[in-house]
Length: 158
Image (tube, rainbow, N blue to C red; front, side, top):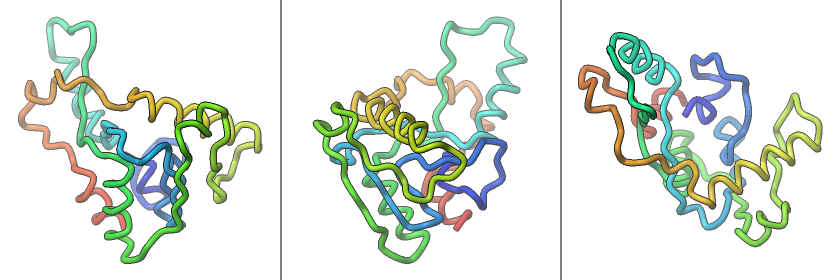
């Protein structure tokens, strides 16, 4: 979730553009934009990890998610938070499979090859459904933690 609040949001994650650059009102969306992504703000995830440390036993996988959104939903929320329409490009699944993706124009700190490689990887994982985490989650084990939802995150940040 942090990526869509950068550079304004409090985070320790290195700045990067994942599909939608909210700061620059730009979007390069993989596929048709309807693939689900499970997202969590890093500080909410940290709160869950602290709680896990108190457990006597951990399950093999500990799945948490703050919200589930599609790129199309995220785009709508980001435009609402910024109060303007974004420049939007959709990369078809066919193009993504061929490695032909739209690299975010405002991406800094990476070579062209690195930026392309990361964008191709994230796009392929998105259309493969890899970011739609299992619904068997541990959130309910810790009801005192109320992870922020994407809408609130964007409105608060922008």
